[in-house]
Length: 167
Image (cartoon, rainbow, N blue to C red; front, side, top):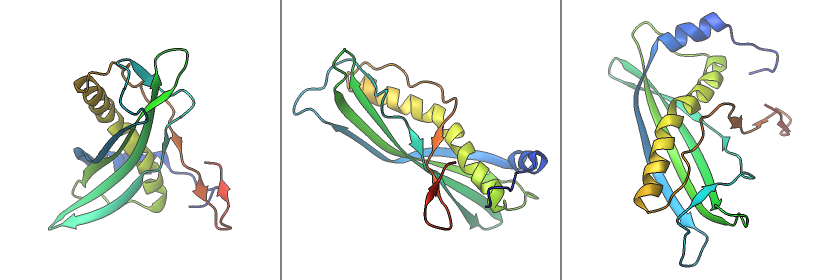
């Protein structure tokens, strides 16, 4: 995709109307603490460790049905909920979202797929917030609910020269 290309809103709208979210799974979940034997009962997400998303999308077909699968790896760091702000917990997970392309919906162009990757992050975020809240509360750890996702940061893309360019 070239930097001057812009996605036509009507093309995007037609594509979105032709997709249906079927499932959200978390096939990879890892909790690691950085303390030897103690995790405080009250923590907060690290302010200096912003979330950066690198979603991937692949297409699959099964009989007459066509699917898109988005994988979104995510790392969330937590720190103590006091003035020290010591990093104490890392949650690594991968959200896997499966979408069905409705009959008559064309397989998306690379321009549409780039936008769709970002859309998958928004679609999966409510499920991720609930999962993290549930994991922490079942572990006896109090943490505020992760905030709403207003403007996610995406990883920079490699240009043809091999240098990272701003997204």
